[in-house]
Structures are given as C-alpha cells and as structure tokens.
Length: 413
Image 1 (tube, rainbow, N blue to C red):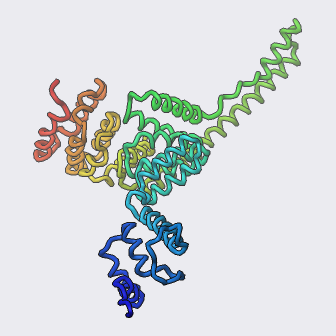
Image 2 (cartoon, rainbow, N blue to C red):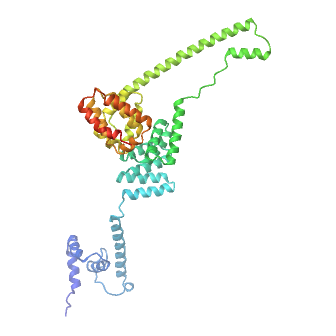
Image 3 (cartoon, rainbow, N blue to C red):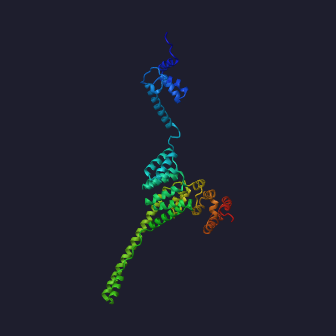
C-alpha cells in the first residue's frame, strides 16, 4: 500500500514551485527568528544541497543537516551584521564625528582630527566644529586654513570667544598684526575676566605697536666737526687755521646732507599721504553693511580719522538693524563715536540722525553702558546733546522725539 505524502513533503514541493517573491510573502508573517529560519530552511532546502527529506537525527549523525546549520549560522551572522549597519544609532552623525575628532586631538593625531571635524562639518556645520578644526590646523602650522575656519565659525556665531582667540593666533603667525590685535581685543571685551585672553591681547598689542613704530631709530653718527674737535682736544693741540677751514667745510657739507634728508622725508610723507588718500577712496567704494558687531567695529576702525567715510559706513547700516547687529557687544567708546558721527550730519539729515539715536537706545545693555560712562564721555555727550541735537535750530517735531530720549541717555543717578 502506497504511503501518502506527508504535509511536509507537499509544502516543500509547492514552495519550490513558487516564485521567490511568493515564497518571501509566505514566509514573512512567520517572522525571522532563529527557530523560524530553521523550519523554513527545512521546507525549502538550501540551494546547491541535496533536497532529500531531512531527518530529525542529531546534527552530528547527519552531515547534510550539519551543513544546513552551518549555513544558517552564517546567514544569521550576516543578517545581524547588516541589520546593525542599518540601525539609526550606528549611522554617522555630526556630533559623534566631532567627539571622535576631539579624541584624536587629545592624542595629538591632528590630521585624523581634521578628517573627523571635516566630516562633522559636512553633515552639519557648526561654529564649534569649524573652530576645533581651526585649532587642529594651528597645531600643524597651516595658519591660513586656521584663519579661514575661525572666520567661518564667527559667521555662524559672532560671539564665540575661542574662534576670536584662535583666529588672533593664526593672524599673528600670518603677519596680520593689526587684525590679530583686534581679534584679541574683541575677545577680551566679550570676556573681560579671562586672564589668558588678556595676556594674548597684551602680546598682540605689543607686537602691533612695535611694527607700527617701524625700525628703531639708528644712532646718529658723530659729525665731522665733533670728530675733529675731539681729535684736537685729544692731542692736546689747539686747532690751527687750516683745521678751522676744514671744520667749516665739513659743517657746510653736513648741513647740505641734512637738508637733502629733510626734502626726501617730506617727499616720502607726501607720497604716503597720497597713498592713504587713494586707499580711503577705494575703501569708500567697498563699504558694505556690516552683519555683526565685529564687522562694524573692524570697518569703523579702518576708517578712523575720516568722519566722512565713517558717516558713510553708518548710513549704509539701517538704523533698525543696530540692535540685531550689536546685540550685547556694543562698547562705550564705539557708542560715543557713533553719536559724534551722527552729530556731523544731524543738521542735513535730522530724521535719519534721530532714528539712529532711537535705535541705539534699543541695543541690549544700553542702559548699563550709559551708566558706566566715564565723566569725560558724559560731559562730551551732554555738550553734543545741548549744542547740536537740542539747539534752538532743531524743529519742534524732532525736539519732542529727542526730549523723550533724554531719560535714556541721561538717567537720573
């Protein structure tokens, strides 16, 4: 009597006749646990293996079954490995790349740290990542890249003190002594109690001042007259008529040389003044609205001494943008200088000038700055206010707006 095929045998033949996609659909609801994978493999077999019915004998007694379990073990390992790669936790992210870069930096593996920071920036650019990469560039003496990275950091966060400090170091090494000093000074204003920043600023200022002074004046050579006189006295003899003539002749030649030097110096000064004038004209063409307190202050100082160009810089800056530009980084000297500048064009453009005064009062920490003004600055402010802003020539509509501002600019002590 023929034995009826078992359910297992029927299922197995049907599964092999199905398309791969149909078999996947049939297997999917069963889950992909290890036990289900074993039973499914018993049904469909393994490609390249004997399709004879499996026995329930122990693995050691059945070589085919042993191979089956070896295959399943490998498959399970690969499945776990691939699923591990697909998890969200193991996928690269900006924060983990930055932290890895920090670890490399601590180990003084600066090039590896730069690679990690670069990947972090590519995933999500932040001021910290740029500043950290800038520090790594400093360590391998790539100062231009360090300066560029710190600038990018400040574009993202214009109050990031470490970026100012590191850019100051990079600019010092690049020979940009004035810019180095300005960066250190701005960092010190943001954090006046930071001793390291104070030290950095003092060093940068000293280097800049030495560079600005130029060469140490050469020791003036002894004149021919003095040499002759000393020689005569040394020999214990009085100068005769011929030596007097020689001394007079030498004195005349020395006078001529001094005159030529003065003419040359005047010519150099004239050329320098002309070059400075041309430079200011070019600077006026390139004046653009600043986006931060740092940009404003650098441009403002670059135009120092020329009130016309400073007024132009102020006018390209919208009055209503002042609170956002300065935030809480406005300093007392800059405030007083801006007010003096506003006074220069008050009579011609009163409405614009009053708007600047109104919006300056909206800058964060304005009241604190006013209260902490020196007695000299307070006296100057009173004089400007009385002689220019609130003079008898000021129309009533502007006088009323200025009167409302008086309590902000001159609070009662």
